[in-house]
Image 1 (cartoon, rainbow, N blue to C red):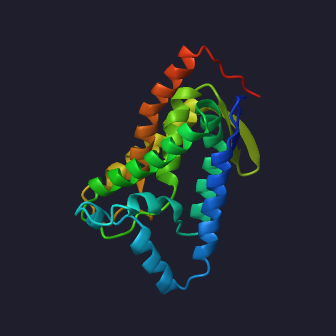
Image 2: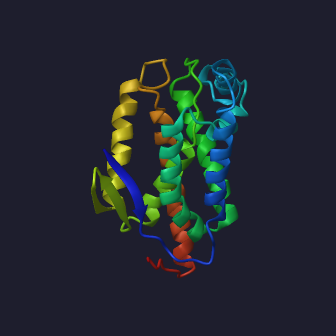
Length: 224
């Protein structure tokens, strides 16, 4: 398995406070989940997770927001927080704290909405921060394509360009997402690929806007 474990950081006048706060909040909410029994946890997911059949019927629209703070297990949480830690900080440092948190939350809502629209008949809750995190990946591809991503492969560590890594990642999501079309079981192997695709697309488009603002300000990225 290939795991990203770091990247080239950039310098800026902003500190990634919301990136770290989001990690803390997600871990806190997951700790709260651990206090629940199986029945209570299932009720929580159906109450605050985005159930496509409910959302597309105009009900429980708030779950498009609340779903991004729930996780289905340790690996789900750790994987998402690892990606958040690696990729989101450069975005926040570059575009500013308030603009970043609004972008992140909007990306998460949009990602959950895409998932629900693609699989409208599903009664399985969509949960997790990966849609919002995918938005940061899309923006990262546009803003930092030449950044180097540190990859762990068993005991070996090597670097690849962000351009190559993120193109491979979204290609995988598109391939797997296509396989779920026509299914109403929400996803394959418990993964909401269309939430990833929707979030990535949102972030990719917004990334051009963020990059153009940087160019107008004549600011460059200083890696370290």
